[in-house]
Image 1 (tube, protein in one colour):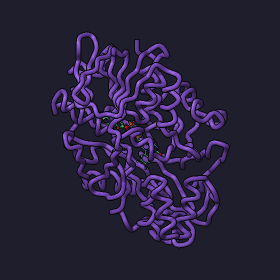
Image 2 (tube, helix red, strand yellow):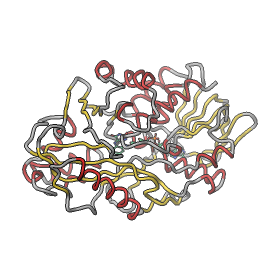
Image 3 (cartoon, helix red, strand yellow):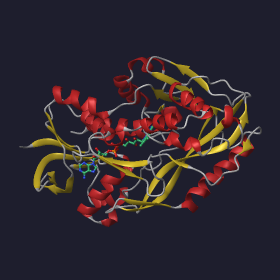
Image 4 (tube, protein in one colour):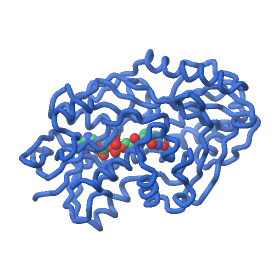
Length: 397
Ligand SMILES: Cc1cc2nc3c(=O)[nH]c(=O)nc-3n(C[C@H](O)[C@H](O)[C@H](O)COP(=O)(O)OP(=O)(O)OC[C@H]3O[C@@H](n4cnc5c(N)ncnc54)[C@H](O)[C@@H]3O)c2cc1C
């Protein structure tokens, strides 16, 4: 059977492409293996960096969406952002101003699978639970190989995730397409601050979730957020190691909270998920920052290895800047600790890909995930990535 569009992957970026493609297009989706497999960061056990299977990491993400104004490197136009956001969160869309810096924390993160099920009912679409092993140009279109069979289409959209797309493209076109690195956000605790003007979180709750204003960060190239510090967490570094669980999928967080209940941790969890009880005497101040080339990448094995010297150089810079910006800050004495943001990106060398005819205007091979994103700024990038993918698909002729 001939398809107009083949989408490789079934995570958030793939879903955005499918939502954007015109109704008349015949679409084939390769969702990844039928038995999903979670891959963890090599150096931090329990923290997922990839899910090979239907829905990808979209099955696990927390769903935090920054407004375009909160994203320094703005890859989402305000109007497009608002239009796509309203499809998922109609109530919050009425209140979220794209021009004001804000983080939206949803009650229910966007999970790809129910949206795929809806699309299957309303569109000419086939979803195959299989891995694509190679991709190539074919005449005026492109083709993919999966389970020993070849499938052709006018266009192929690579949405296999930062690691999956790097593996597929280097296997198909050569190692020179890889940057050799993976970039990511990391999250660090800067220390404790007193409740005073400018340090307490400003939270507005609604039907779909809550909206929080990030702290003004002056010249600091990081997203600063304060979270209520209660019980053991109100002591400097009191909960710093235990709070690493907030980097895990929600189910794992709940499991750990049930196993070893800790009032400080429960208080922060209630704030993180629902924006509850924002007023406290003291706050833990956290920074999320982008670390370019934080890990080395062996694309064929999808093995990533942390580069501590690169990570600490970036986090130390933010710690120093924060100490002069927030006079009441009692700085953390654990500068060695960080949590990976799980916002993997920049694994494909965009210049090399374009030289190979991939991802350029009119190319039948499109790159629509974070493998080619570069300056994502310090805020969560995934919804911005979806907006770009959605737009690419809507405007592709
Ligand atoms: C616990 C957690 C919390 C997070 N919280 C946030 C957050 O709050 N905000 C935010 O912005 N981001 C967050 N993220 C990051 C976010 O989940 C990812 O950025 C996003 O899901 C990536 O989507 P993707 O579709 O590009 O890639 P992926 O989710 O990695 O999907 C890749 C897809 O490609 C498929 N695939 C791979 N290789 C092949 C192949 N060869 N053939 C066929 N299919 C293939 C896989 O099966 C999968 O379906 C979080 C992540 C985690 C794990």
